Image (cartoon, rainbow, N blue to C red; front, side):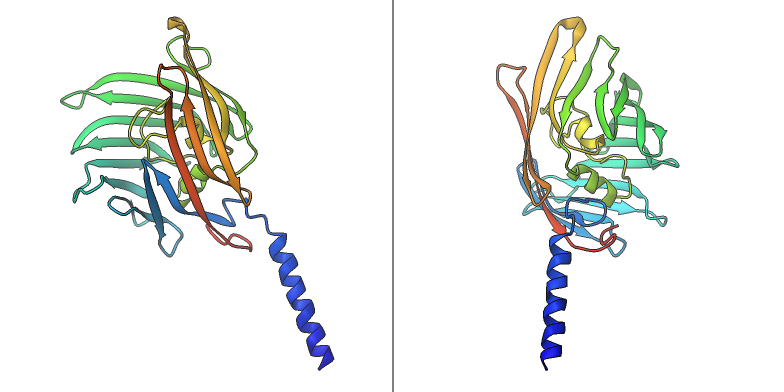
Length: 275
């Protein structure tokens, strides 16, 4: 009897040690996003049997994700609060390394597109941003050259005079947008969200947040030819090794522009619990 008690005690102790030693900050293996605060709404995440994100559901809005027979994301619908049909629709095309084209449709009309060019299987060389006019013609185009330091995008268009973006510092924590990216089968970047260098558009996320492995802390958007420089900060809150809140601020205007994001997680111990 004493032997059984001893074995039970040792087993319980070993379990506690194993749990306490788990690295819950590893977004690709031990954690996935359970809830996502975006555009003043808490969205609860739903996943299918293969681990793909299928829905972000709030009290009166939802974002749906659709996959083809190869489990590749081909469309995402955003239902605005209180509306029964999706006014905002994203469609996606894929290459060997991931999504190569993101097209944004508003009320059935193609208005914007991002063409993604990869440098390696894990990093992007450039993004060509396009805006369309009536008839489907490109009315505006802006090529964006990416520069990485490690896994983080630290400069966009460093040699341009029209617009540049510099991320000066990052934390060392897993980026929750990268967790979301992995959950739709496109681990290089999170593909849903409008083109933005400062928090002004609906459903916007900065490029450095969408494409970087860690979370930015300080940055600057600039138009050097116009002598315009807009300092930015990302104020992050952490719990259990993960980011639980991000406040993105741009102080270059008379009124400070702000966008808030927040995250809740499912975290489990073990090798590659979430794929």
